[in-house]
Length: 442
Ligand SMILES: Cc1ncc(COP(=O)(O)O)c(C=O)c1O
Image 1: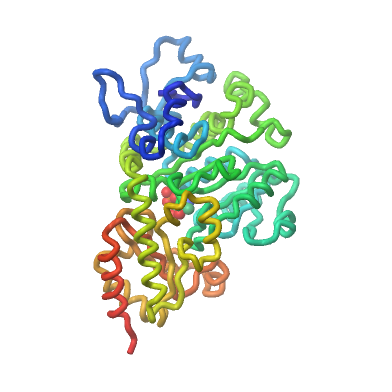
Image 2: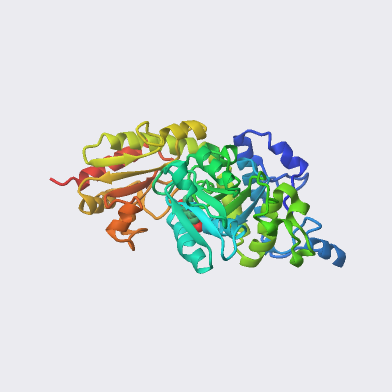
């Protein structure tokens, strides 16, 4: 257990050579003889210190160790180490939600007067965070169409731009990032490339291998996999040179921590240690040990669940594509999808995750009876659960927008989003078949 600081330890280095299944099951927690074999829930807010001098060393970041739950706890430290290993990063900080993870990652990089470039195809919560909340705090965002030409995209960057943000799989547009183009662009302008890997998970895609510098997740989704707990994580790829003149706070002494320079003290783990020491402590976006325990339990089966999510989603997408009541289907695992080549290039060939969208003929008048008739799938605002779930974004998550705004955001009125679970594909398809029959308009 590395405690408050995040530094590579020998046990973690060993675990880096494990296959992804072994990492999912065992990484992050090293059992001791006579101690618990499974990761315990350390339901404690405080830790006993040795003496006053040790407290001084802990509080000046000279020694690693737990001080107070807001900045660290053994249960979520183990979960963080597992996620850092799965993504191939140098360290991670878990947060109370995915939204908090995005906030923490971005707050660690920007100040009032700075600028963000973000794909416009990001999760609605991130869109509002950047476009409205960060704007109110003095940070402007330019939203780009990630499919624009490189010449067009260059125009979005300014001297005060501090990061480029995108999602591996956009939610709910389901576009796949062109990592090569966007990582190249971020690095051309000397800013870190921050990627939300929630829908892909490290099982399907590892953004650090394709030029990302920081990865974030809503662990509420596939990482936990069972819709029991809210959580998020920020992971540091350890590849970015913070001593490039753009990020003086990484290099100059932090007077609140005995003049520690994060870059000098932590080297390539400067980002994550700074995030923890400054923003986790001062924003207080810390998870609970119980949630970290449940999320870690779910993560133990990620490598078994993801292939099943992918296989079931592909089977349902192929079924829907042929159905006469269906206007269109978007699933990046279909050969007809515009991003299919990127799945082959950046994903590990196990599939394209479990989320698909489709348009139902008859619009809302057909959607109402269709959703009502579903027996296995339920109407839920969530993705990445073991259970199949559907949502009509135009009447729920995007109801505040006008029909024109919804269209611009890629949410047509006839769109149903499906998060395909890990039940039997035949049962899911039969459930959709009977619900489509119930929605048939003679
Ligand atoms: C891609 C993505 N990122 C971040 C979030 C926010 O996560 P949370 O709901 O855990 O705060 C979500 C939530 O749906 C999401 O889909």
